[in-house]
Amino acid sequence: MTRFDAATEDERLKLFADAAAAHRARSGDVMTVDVDPDSDDTEGGEVPPWIQLAGTELIMDCTDEELERLKELLSEFPEFRIDELVSPEEAEGTNAVVTARSDANRVAGFIERAFCEVYELDEEYRAWVTAI
Image (cartoon, rainbow, N blue to C red):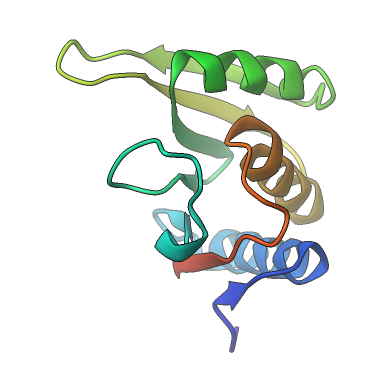
C-alpha cells in the first residue's frame, strides 16, 4: 500500500478494502482505521471514532445510541454478528466485538457505513489507516 488516507466514499472503500486484504495477507495483529480529528464532528470526546480489524473481528467503541445504530446496521449484514459487548465501569460506553466473516470488500463496506451511520460522520470525513 502506498496511501494511507482518503476523504471520499470511493477512495475510503478502496483504502479500507486494500488495508483489510493486506492485514489478512500479512496475518497482522490488528488493522486500525482512525478518523482524522479535523473530520470528527461527533462531539464524542477527545478521541475521534476508530474501528479495528483483528483477523475476522471488528472492534469499536460505542455510546448507547451508537450501539443501537450498530445493531440496526448489522441487520443488513447477516454474515456479521456481535460476539461480545464490554462496558467497563470506569468508561462511558461499550466496546463491541463484531465477527465479520466476509471478504475484504464487504468488510470495507461495513466500515464505511459504520462511520457514516453508527458514528454519523459527515460524508466528506477523512479516514487514516494507521496500522495494518
